[in-house]
Length: 355
Image (tube, rainbow, N blue to C red; front, side, top):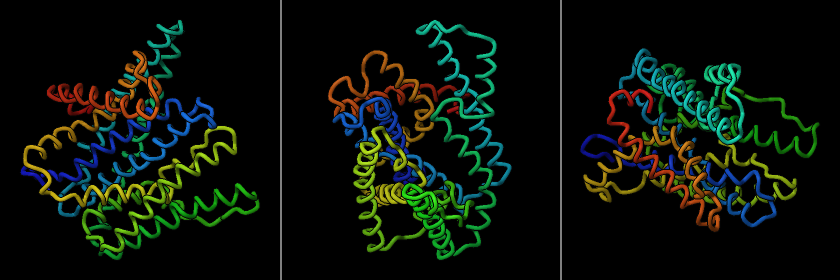
């Protein structure tokens, strides 16, 4: 499903909706921690938060879809010089931007003095990471990119059954076993599962899954099974997060984790649903618009939290009206403003290195 410029339309769509999902997540989470769990508004925040937890796994799947494709030549030096270097620059520039924003904000609104020690700490957060909470993703991405040359050797020589075997191991030992271990320890500290394959407890599984789902056709029954499990996972996350939080008397975000079986099925469901959209639905003009928005998503991801802070200051928050409407409305405003800024900023040649 490609447009005339050889861009994959469903991949562009996935990138856009995953970026918007991240914004929804951060808008709903802004009140999630402070609102009493028995309050109806908290249940609304929980609803939105539970529905968009697949965003980061989708990003990772998209990276794997392109970087593991053996038909695309990507040398180790190219990965380091082009992709990792760009991410490092983004970490430095945006990390310093957000640290400066925090320091100046506290100086203006809280009368906190700007000390030499505070400035040193701000710089220290760059290598220690992350300098701002949502930039953690960039550090994780560097790790995946460093391993990509090794992963590509495996994919180049692997058959479909080999990658499927790897995904089964990721599901069982990277997601199910740690989840089961957590559940058992909750009931009795003696029920500890000591066996684990720690190498599988990371985002590499999503990396390979993205390539697998883009490369190999999924039969109808398997696809229906994933859709059912994905739908049940959404319901499970919403209901169980609410139940656990109310029982504990405070918000509990364990079931929001990216490395959970439920989150995996949600991500697979979203990926396959968007991939299944008929390419005939998109005219060349629509595909071009989608492509242009997609090209801005990295910048939107980087700048959106700053825009969120600004619009919250002017009163467009996650509860400026009923949260059921406020969360999506605020998210749309943040997305549109971020898109406009990044779209025009991208016309500056140097911007391509940091967004």
